[in-house]
Length: 471
Image 1 (cartoon, one colour):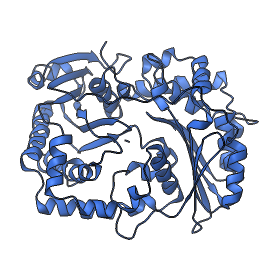
Image 2 (cartoon, helix red, strand yellow):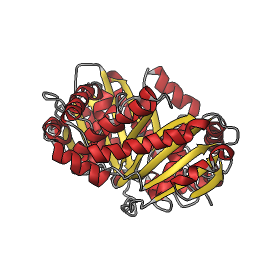
Image 3 (cartoon, helix red, strand yellow):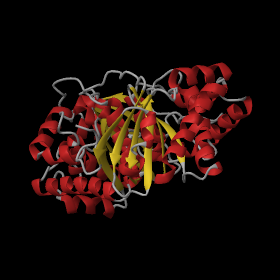
Image 4 (cartoon, rainbow, N blue to C red):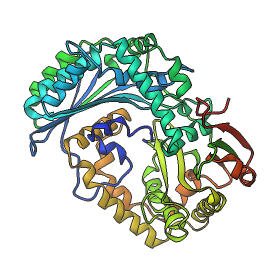
């Protein structure tokens, strides 16, 4: 989740569009509105942005750690914890908690990503006190009810099984990360898999809560129509006495890049399509070259008229779409190419994707493509800062990764400075060679097994295996 994991659960309630485009360009004249930063007594970081053009207030809370805190074999623990925290908290059971949100016409959701447990809410300004009350109850006083836990875990397992049975497109990234990163923490599925979820107990959730969800790991952002002195006071009362964690939040080290090619074939007997994922270790959220990387990726696989989509969809008709993306985390996540095609077109589609990657390395971008990418990115950025939720999400993203407001304000200048030399440097350093890829194929193994051996050593597993990686 970029980010694929990341960007994130904040988008659950459509209040963090800014995180989704953390690498986009800021047009000239678009600046992040003024905000103030406060540190609570327990070390929690707070950012407050007053914006009175709409009578709404959005609030985001990130608790550093995320699925990196999951114990091996218990992947999905923090994800289940996040879901359970909104199934009853403080004086309200699950139904009463949901009714309090809906009765105010608000939105509230909690989820997990690789590096944080994330809560987001959006309420009318007049209900800011209720919003803070509900979020603080969910985070500080969750009921963690046994019956609700059983339902949440069962639904998570059923959802994975249903996706495997029908359309595994949403799961190909989980297989890809597991195959690329293997034992590295970034290879763990944030939501767990059928096997790990079956092992997670309510005691695991309670242990994770008491060890990980603590005051000094908090990032709180509020944007909208509110009185800052009042909100500061309420936040201090609600969150300021929350104790510190016994140790630092878990972090990951940088993963080594893939050398050579290897193939994971996930057998889905009778499948009429092959879903494919080609990837290697990419770039982090704070990579100094992220602007040039974003420009190149826009042209290569980041928009409808990209090189990948033009070749695989528009010209050849081999697929309904193809794209490439960076999963940007504190350390480099995956750079991936994803698409799907009819079973009989598996090899032609893969060959064309690899040939397009080769062309990027060989030819780079000409001046027209570079100018087009700049214009496209400038035009795509303003909507990501239109809402209070988007602004709160962007603030949370900046604080999580230790970035200043210049990440937004200075981006137009940085994108203008991306020249041919920066493009070439980015392609050579960050975009993988077609000969250095982890490849995942989900499809009918009997139909494609022999043909795909030319791409590298093949390891097989069944889609009915309850894990996302071979044993």
